[in-house]
Length: 355
Ligand SMILES: NC(=O)c1ccc[n+]([C@@H]2O[C@H](COP(=O)([O-])OP(=O)(O)OC[C@H]3O[C@@H](n4cnc5c(N)ncnc54)[C@H](O)[C@@H]3O)[C@@H](O)[C@H]2O)c1
Image (cartoon, rainbow, N blue to C red; front, side):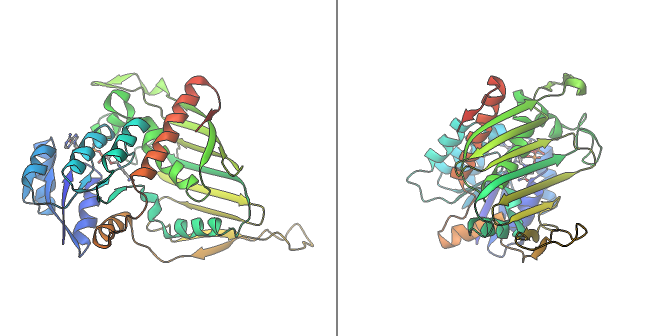
């Protein structure tokens, strides 16, 4: 039985503890948060006995094999490195760090240690997506020519996720002082992984980040300066071109991911809000040789149904038990972090940048 300690008992922690407690090979034995109120409410809810207010105390006193790091972005690096230095396996929330240099230090800390490390790019949990990746990588749609990917949220323009003006869990996401890279770091990190994993490395990009000050300048001590929208043009190492975009003002969409990839022999696409309930399928077409007698005939897309796969939490436990580190690992987290840094650089310099 793998014994897990959880650091950060906020919003996303519920999902982590639920998954690790559901797994017959793991259990959550200890939790840690700097807020005692949050810690106690969380531990009471999930029946966790050992409670700590600092990660140092958790690592010194708790009998654990692994840590799941569910703190805000700015704490990912220091907490994860402390965990690694104590020889515990580490599962970390995305983005891996605040910048590539920090992400690289996290990877360096793992060198010569036989520790399982994963980053929670949660949209990889979609089985339809994983099959789409295999389809693209098998060459079935031919050479990749073009792609587009979008991640749409609307928590700045609707009340679907609550009121961002009053809740700290949204306010830190709007403030660079609080360690946020805005929508680029929050959901751009997902969509860059999602879009590039099937196709391969990105060679160069040109991005534009924007912070809409119409929402105000400051609330409490949160300066609202982190970007809320970005667009980017991408060129892949294999020559394919594409666009990747994201916004928190996508009215009408709560949490939408879309990806289309066009090759010279076919195409694939996938769209969902929830990767678990809607992500067990993708669409495929190779309708390129048919003769058409009428414009009323439509180009055909096939729905490919897929069976649920191991999610990231299950993969983490499986990695510890079987000694084979599943993806996405810290190195992949750092690769994506580099792309995010390059987007910021490109936006500031108003130019194409090489990766
Ligand atoms: N994979 C996903 O799809 C997904 C979804 C949502 C959030 N996240 C990520 O999860 C992380 C947490 O997000 P959230 O929405 O749960 O935030 P949150 O603000 O709701 O919770 C964070 C918790 O960490 C605690 N904390 C802060 N500093 C700490 C420290 N030094 N030691 C211990 N506890 C500390 C806070 O008190 C708070 O309870 C973020 O990095 C976010 O990007 C990932």
